[in-house]
Length: 322
Ligand code: COA
Image (cartoon, rainbow, N blue to C red; front, side, top):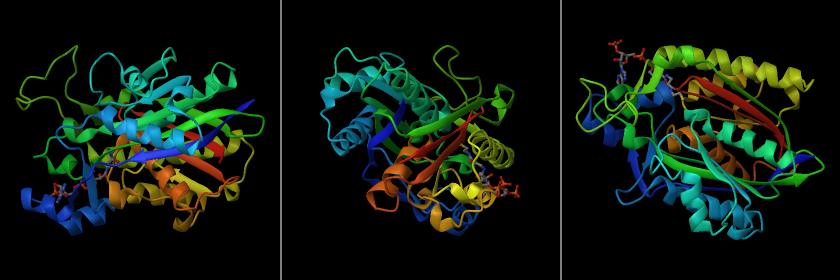
């Protein structure tokens, strides 16, 4: 028994902030940001909007694409690092809106790898026969934990949500998922506080922010994502030429290009949204997947490799036949 993606959906907030907008606020330029990251613009959540608001749009679109009703969902696996509340978890908040009462609903936190983690969890429930219609969500409001005066991070992040629905299938489907973490790298990319610790002394008064050692994270991402590509192919006895589409985490165009090169894939076979979305963390892989599916590039039967790396560090991949 496998699980298979039967619907995808996504949502981006209406407000767009371009590199030119940022250059008016801080010492940076469109040319620098595009050259170093590939990012041109990003969507930023409205003041009255929340993580779960975005997730609901993405989830309803994915459920409709699957030909199901929201009340059909029997499991919610929700990846996020920027929840509306500490609890109830975002999965429960979303479940109440969708009306699928009683379905287990949880959120898990693995920073930018959160969707791959959430997908792997849901896949295991479906394979075990414990879910027939699982909703997997990645939704993130990184703009609310970004220090908008720090040009090292403020240029990178955007907000958004993506979702998929999984159902059981005798044919793959999700072929394998691969998850890793190495907490010894926690100092390279982190948020300065949390509810158990409070804001760190000396931090900006209004709260906790993402801090990142950019070039170290960059090098680590290229190394670890390269390694997980090898691991995924080797475990499935596949040659890299078998992959039809790379659907990567959208952190930086140069990281994406390095992974594509490792796979021997031309960039035309990579779904790239980083220029439009920036880094939407947990949302970036399902957003890119939905873009590729809806514009008709990704077709039924194509072999997809999804991968991501995020704070922790955490990293992971999923090999699947769409
Ligand atoms: N605009 C203009 N200059 C900037 C800048 C900005 N927004 N941010 C940094 N700089 C400057 C730095 O101060 C530095 O100046 P200096 O040489 O005078 O000290 C110079 O640009 C180079 O900085 P560096 O950090 O070495 O640049 P980089 O090529 O590594 O690019 C990142 C920076 C953040 C774009 C890049 O490291 C990156 O993308 N890292 C990975 C980030 C990531 O993927 N994070 C999320 C993982 S989920």
